[in-house]
Image (cartoon, rainbow, N blue to C red):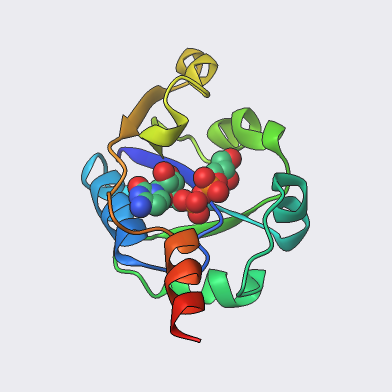
Length: 130
Ligand code: C2G
């Protein structure tokens, strides 16, 4: 049983998110997503359109996702990796290099981001419509 963990805000869920989750799941058998709480998003300087409960419900509906846990701060990853016995930590490669220290605890994998889609792009494109 190989367990994979990843983190994110997952606001305005889009196909780039889904492709990340699909490839993360393919690396193991069980995928845990640390979902940024609204409070942590404020720390990240993000204001999500959907609140935590809505974003959690949407992630739990995805076939690749086995468990959603709250991400409250930057520093919880080592505890999560231990608590959930994660074998692989995965992020999109916009984070390449940022979490290499977790390599002491588990395998660290950065997957290529999906080009042409992002929550910001969705918001900007919608702005143009108004
Ligand atoms: N992603 C992707 N392709 C996109 C957009 C996002 O592969 N076009 C990936 C990101 O690289 C990330 C995940 O989808 O791995 C979630 O993206 P965000 O919700 O933007 O997450 P972020 O704000 O980067 O939060 O502690 C880590 C942070 O919580 C990461």
